[in-house]
Image 1 (cartoon, rainbow, N blue to C red):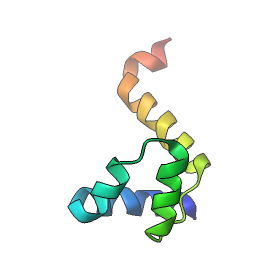
Image 2: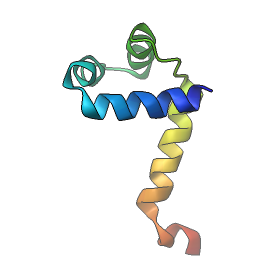
Image 3: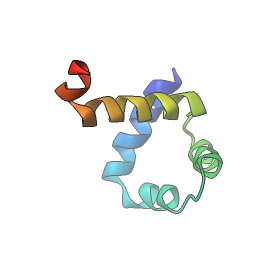
Image 4: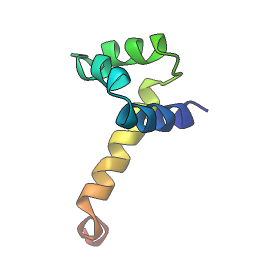
Length: 67
């Protein structure tokens, strides 16, 4: 269920500057995960890896499918 936690974190951080601020100040993946967990979100490294891969697929668009 942690993927849904990541989606919830992103949605809430987009709406709430007080939530977004501590996340933006993170300097590493480890720090980001610690801050997210302290804020009550059960996010994992795996979730972030999947999100990064999904973002890359979307950024590549149809060109990635032709390759």
